Length: 192
Image (tube, rainbow, N blue to C red):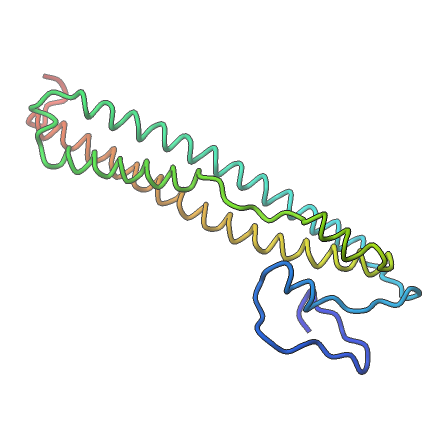
């Protein structure tokens, strides 16, 4: 049995079918009838860990947004400086390639920075489906739903992280190419 799975009561079977990771199907698939008297002693501990993980995901996503903003700013400055460079410098192929890579870095940073549909709890649906359910059932369904939300958020943060890393790498390459283009145009001399 994997972490997060519960043993089913005797005689109760889960429906067989397509298993996707959407909140609705996950909730329906893993919702198990909980008897009113049944104790769930570790529910609070697991819920606290899930809440902490959601907070960590939120903080990580915000941190990646900040980094993407910094990369976007530096790429913009690099392209702006390149656009105002003297023709003898800006005419070199290495310099032009560096500017093109800076534009790619800016695009990747902007792509990482764009808002995504972050998983949230559908409170109206929660009210409608759980108004008559027992407290234990509702707590268990909330826990399962929040676990799915953490999994979906982790996927979004992972994608955002990849884009920021690619943007940072592109910016580093762009800066190196621009400097190489300037030095090539100047014949390797640091000053004109």
